[in-house]
Image (cartoon, rainbow, N blue to C red):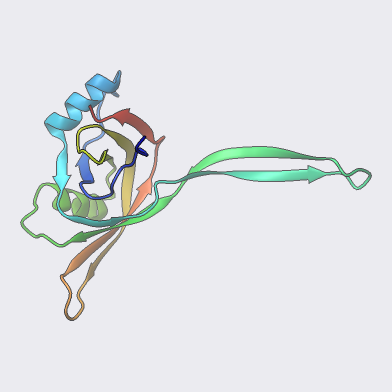
Length: 159
């Protein structure tokens, strides 16, 4: 039996306005993403999509027992590196405008399986907190954006 796997190759990054009203179900989400999402051109790297909780451990001086208390969920940020494309007025320009105007958006990361047929999507609201254009000898010009996850991370079938 083959081990199921999702390759990073073929990953699509989609950016769009935050829907109002919020999507009612996965079908509505997928329809809106396919209709209104803007593809972000040529991602090179995406960081980790992470959520963590603070944990506090309590123990008594008089015993070896301990308790743990879980705090609220904190969402991380990640750096997204793209090949700079000044003609990508849809995706890359949208992200640069988010940075300049401090506006939120909805990011969708679409992954496909090894056959490219079945996959999954992660979506979340976000801000862009940093914007960097890297120019180095013997390399393509790269645009690096720091994306701040600002909502729950939802997973749906890319179906």
